[in-house]
Structures are given as C-alpha cells and as structure tokens.
Length: 231
Image 1 (cartoon, rainbow, N blue to C red):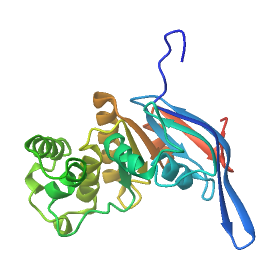
Image 2 (image 1 turned 60 degrees about the horizontal axis):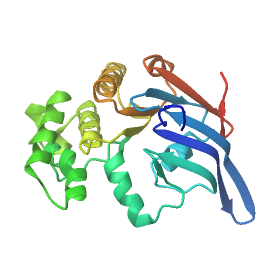
Image 3 (image 1 turned 135 degrees about the vertical axis):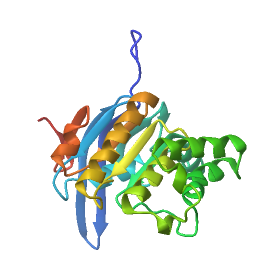
C-alpha cells in the first residue's frame, strides 16, 4: 500500500477452487475478489451451492485454493507450509460453526481454554484468566464448571464464541452460527458478536441465509455462482 493507506485485514484476488471427481471438473469459485477490513462485522449471503462454505474454508486456511492469492493479516497464505499455516491459524483466526463442536468430556471453561492450551503447549494463568473473562462476557460464569453436555443449545454456542476469541484472533469466521438456535437466542448471539467486534476490533465474517441477521451487520457480501456479486 502507498500514500499512507492501511492494508486490509483480508485481501483475496482471482481466487479459484476446482474439485475433480472421476472425469468431472466442478469449479466452485470462479476468480473471486474480496477485501475485509479489521474490525468489520460482515454478513456473507448466497444461495446453496454458491461457494459460501468453500470460501469460508479457504479463508480459514483449512483448504487450499486451486489458484489465486490470499493475504490475511499481512501474510501470504496460499503457499505457506502446513506447519506454519497451523500456527498462523491458531493465533490469527477464530471459528464458530453451526454445530458448536464442543468437547463433551470437557467443562465450559476447559472448552474455551482448549485453543490456548494448543497454542501454549499447556495452560497458563493468563490464559485461564482470559477464558474466565470471556465466559463472563457471554454470561456464563455460573456455568464455567459444567460439562458441555449439560448446557442448552444457546449456551453451547456462547461457549463456542468464547472459545473462538480466547487467542485474541483478528478474524472470526462464523458458518451459520445460529442455524440450530431459536429466534430469540439467534438475535442475542448476533448482537453479542457485534458488540465484541466493535469493542475488540475483531473482524467477523458470518455466513447466513437470514436477512434479519444480515441487517444487524455493517456490511453484506453476496456470493453468486462463485463470484462476489454487485448488489
């Protein structure tokens, strides 16, 4: 960047992803371009099969594109060695899924701490204090020692959000995070995400089919047939 401009948190250029099955080639992403700013609260919308999940998986560094460039937090991602990519993912990215994927034999607090354990090779006093603060932030201090199997669906998703934030990521990717929640719990979770995004300057990219959720975001990106659409 020149002239004092600030680099975007995420810059995607001409991203292509092609899948091969037998002799059939399916191009899911077709030269997609995208930029996300730090601290943004952004909805990603599009019909089924449009490429939303593929894009999120590539942005999450869990899938490599066929071609194109991807830069996140000043790092070139596409050709980064796997060992470096794992460390980058753990310190830079957070994930909230439709299915919370909590560890059933762990307490709420232990689930939140898990990414910090992986990053640090074990528990630290600072990580535990931060995890406890996050559980308080999502209104679950009184459930910290409960096994995750004893929590309601909405509580599990709030634990999952706290877990996504424990390593202080710059970007949180949320794939249909309210898909298994009732209306009231869904809106509360989105409002909490928005509050955290604005206060912590954490960028959230939320894949959703729900126009009401998109309306609570600062920006909505539409993906159609493997490209970002101008709406």
